[in-house]
Image 1 (cartoon, rainbow, N blue to C red):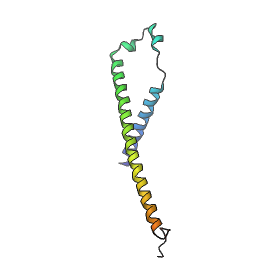
Image 2: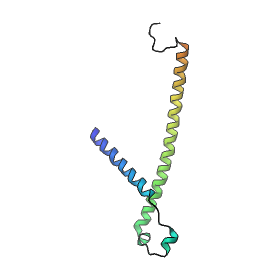
Image 3: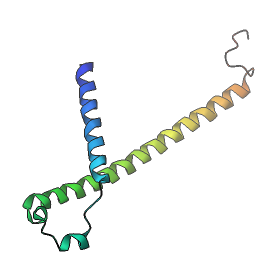
Image 4: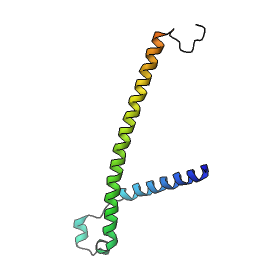
Length: 101
């Protein structure tokens, strides 16, 4: 099972790297393309690729925003726990690992 999960994570990572690399490639300028015939623009596949690209862009934006909110909540919980530990250790003997008392 662990082997299967590691394969899934590897494939998702490779797909993510490929997607980021494809987005980083330079785009064809519209003014440069007007003088030349580009068949990909007229092809119906290009329309679907643009829709998928827009969907992935909005999905990644929403996912990153939600992840940021979850991380902020987690950070607040950790900070509360740290202040509680500091408060408890200052009320005690000063050393929380000291078992002599």
